[in-house]
Length: 119
Image 1 (tube, one colour):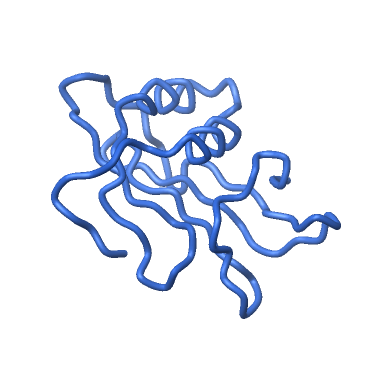
Image 2 (cartoon, rainbow, N blue to C red):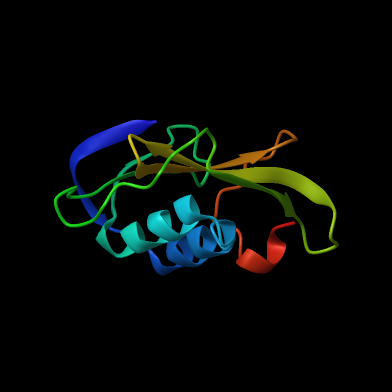
């Protein structure tokens, strides 16, 4: 992943995807959801997939109780409901750090999938 020093606000489609992936009632997921408004995109994958790297001001929000990695995952399906890849949420030291979107075939997933494409 390529990173840069300062970042843009997280795009709305990334917010929706993170909210869907972190929709369980687990305490770690609730704490990570609270971090979303403070996220900035500081990197994107160099392979042209839709993966994003995040940063945030840690003084503005509490760390989540992280107990493993990834923090959340799902299968990404195409318009016909066929699996084409996956989405993973990672945290580092209790803070959201990246959203990885990957394909199982040769074609990259170049746009963040809509939440209704997760299984």
